[in-house]
Every structure is written in C-alpha cells, then in structure tokens.
Image (cartoon, each protein chain N blue to C red):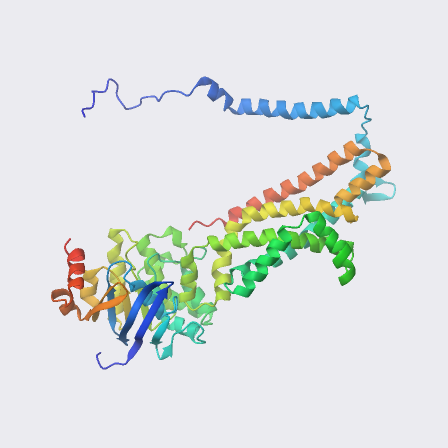
Length: 248
Length: 281
C-alpha cells in the first residue's frame, strides 16, 4: 500500500469564499487504494476539501491533481475527471423523478454512452451489492433514508469510479439506519476502492481508515494512522475534539 | 401544580359544538342560495336595465353565426371561423413564447455577465411597454421594416410580450429544484446542458405547470387586443357582426361566453396533465 502512487495531491491549496478563508495552505495526498477519513468541527473546511476533489468547488491557488489531471474551473478534462470520482452526499440527492434503476443508469447511458442493456446489467449488479435489488422499480420517495443512501452509493459505483468521496453520508439518517449504510461502505473499502470520507462515525473510522485527518478552521491540524490518532493525538485541538465526540 | 380530578370520562366525550349561525353560513345549501341570488341579481339588473333602454333582444339571430344548415349543406359561421383563428393565433404565439421564454430564462441563469445583462434588458424593455403600444410598434414600425403582415405582427407581438412572463415562470421553476440535484448531476459527470435536460427541467415541470396554465389562458384572452389592427379573430368578428346588425348586447355576451368556454376547457385539461406530473420528493 505505502508504495502505491498518490492519486489525489493537494499542493499548497487555498480556497476563499469572499473574505472567508475556507482552506488554508492545504498539502496532503491520497494514495491509490487508500482510505482516508476526515473529521473536525463543523465549518472546519472538511466538505470544502472533498468538494474540491471533483470540482464541485474550485480552489483559488495552489495545485490540486487528481488521477494525473490538474483540477481547475476551465479544465477540458473536468467532465472526464468527475466520471472517475464518485460522490455520496449527506442528503442523498437522488433524482426524485426517476426510478431507482433509472437513477443508476442515467449517468452511464447519457454520460459514458454505455448501451441501456449493459447499463441495466451493471445497475442490477450494484443494487445487489448494496442489498436492495428488489427496490429497482420504485421511486426514491418510497424508500427509507438508509435505502436511499445505499442507492446513492450504487449510483456512484455504476459510473465505475476509481475514487469515492463521502460527504457525511450518515449524518441525515435515523440512528437505526446508520449501520446498514456503514456496512456497505466497509464492504466497499474491502474491495480496495480509494475512499475519502468525511464523517463523525469514529467506529467506522477505526475499522477502515488507513489515515485519519483532523481539520479545524480551514487547516489540516493532524494527519496520523488511526491507532496513533485515537490513542495519542499530537495536538491539543484534536484531543479536545475527540474527547467531545467520543465521550458519549 | 396538581390536576383536579376530572368529573367526566375523557373517552367518547363530545367536543363543544360550533355556533349554529356559523354552521348555517358555512353549509352547502346556504352557499348555493347565496350564489344563485347574487348571479340572479346581476342578470336581472342587466336585463331590466336593457328593457328600460327599450333594447330589442334578438337572441334567435345568434346561432347562425356559429353554423348554418341550409340547402347548400352545413357551413361554419363567422364566430366559429373567428374562434379557430383566435386559437391558431394564440397557439403559434404561445409556442414561440415558450421557446423565447426558455432562452431568456437560461440566459438569465447562465451566470455570465453579458447574457444576464441582455436578458434583463429585454425583460425590462418589454415589461414596461403597454401591450397595445407594443402591438402598434410591431404593426406600424417593425412590420414595414421586416416585411411581415398584420397576422404575423400580432403573433410576434403576443409571443414577445408573453415570453417575458413565461421566462419568469421558467426561472422560478428551475430555481425551485433543489441545489443538491445540480450537484448530483454534476458529480456523475453531466455537463450543464445534460443536467438541464435530464435532471433539472423534468423536475421543474411540476412547479411550472400551474402558472403555465394561467399563461395559456392569459394568452387566449390578450389575443383579443389584435382586433385593433383588424386581424380577423374572435373579437374582430364580434365587432364586424355588430356593425352589420347592431345586436351589441347579444354579440358581446356570446363572444365573452365563447372565450370563457375555451379558457375553462383549457384549465380543466391542464389540471389532468398536472396530476400526471405530480411526483413527490
């Protein structure tokens, strides 16, 4: 693992919203197959960080390279790049006017120009993997939150992405549905997928993370393997944060 | 604070009744009686007013303007021909208005400074000119310059006027779609055009249908204004018949009823379509 090449590289990246300095001099890299979990208080720039990776937001200075391609607003490769990078959102963001199956096939058919029959075969395969093959013909509104989030994961998988980004995937879920989503994510991690996950689910982080990242006020405060991160964090800010979320 | 021992059992207890007068006023029977009384009063006032003027009602002469059935066979009357003209005029104008409205809305939402400026300028220009003046501009100024006749002048004028209103409907409908839908579409690699076509516009249809219905009805009604440049549609036909027969009361009542029938049918038709597109999020 440690010898594989970096697939995502932030090199002194800064990002502003007006006067607000959202990302401050970020330099970090993710290797192919690495699972990175990012945590930190709200407003610390975690979401901004991963939204820069697939160009949902664009950084203002520094160099961000994903899969060998530099990410910037007018890049010709940005659409190509987004196909390589799947994203799962906090609010699922399924397409409510399409059935589950159509949600999964519209990307491959319209963007990747895959034939409808092949797209459907792939879609059913991934629905099987997220364990809801029987919901294929329903509309998203008929599904529970946990099921919707699993459909959203399958939708990203159908694009045959090589990198998956998760932006607080369980924060909008009822407590009893969190595990069904985390289970799917653990299985995905076991397949060797490169994953960058923003989450507060520390049990999940312990189980799958290769690298833990703690952010605060737009800076990366701490980067460490989970065993060090959870037992002996170097910075006081990180320790205070962990105390707050792990104590109960 | 202690709770007093209840002197009744809660189970099956009837709630206090509403005031009898409020109940009576709110009843269907009362509504029908009041409605009939008001409408009857208006009709009676109009009729007795006309009688006092010594108006000579000639309703029997009206049907021939819808159709005639003589030895020569069946023939459509003038009002029917005028109605068809009104409908074709309005539908062509509406189709053009939808296309133009969509373009104006997309320009406005493009986020590009030039495009937004162009569409806002167009919007403000058209919105601040009275429809009648706009019609004169198209017929007396643009018509001769670009060489289109009164029929096309009226169609283009109506299309331009309504495109502004329709663009606002498109804009509101597009903005009503959640921002997350854009992000999801973008994240699976869709271009802006693909996102509009496959994700955003299909969802905004249900937000746009109710105000769009209003616009169709509005279009049919405002098409009457083209009678001032003598396009032979329903209102012009009405004026022509009156100038020949002097039956102004009967004819205007009839023309109004025809407009009402058309717009009511349209409203009912679209409410069926609305049900089809009703998707809950």
